[in-house]
Image (cartoon, rainbow, N blue to C red; front, side, top):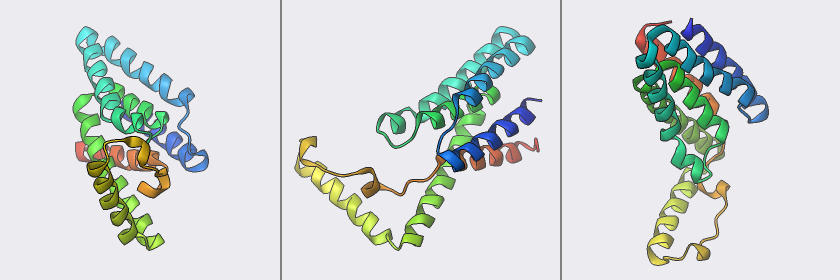
Length: 170
C-alpha cells in the first residue's frame, strides 16, 4: 500500500513540477503525515523512529543545495516525504540515483545548448575568483551562469522509481 501511494505521489509531483515548476505542499505534507502515521500504527515507536529517520535523511541531504539556492523547497519536502514513507536507507539511495539522473539531465542540456566547454570554464573561473578574492561582494554571477535549470522532481521521481525497482517491489 505504501508503495502504491508513493508511486501516486511521484506521478503527481512529476506532473506539477514539469508543468509549473512547483511541487505542492498539498501533496507532500499529507504524504509525510501518512508515512509517520502508517509506521507508528503498524510498528509502534520503532516504526515512528524508522519514518522519522527517513524524513530527516530526506530533509538533510538536500538542505545545503536548498540553502545555496540551487534547489526549491518543494524538492526538499518531496524527498522528506519519500524518506518518511520508505525510511533512511531507501531515501539515501533514491537520492544518489536522483543525483546521477540529475547530472545526466544537466549534461544533456549542456550538450544540447552546445555549452559544455563554457560551463566548465565558468566553474574554473569561479574557483579561481574564490581562491583569489575572499570577498563574496566581488563575485557577480547569476544562477544561469552556474548550471542549467530543470525541474529536479523529474530526477527524484526517476531515482525513487529506480530504487523501488532495485528493491523488487514493482
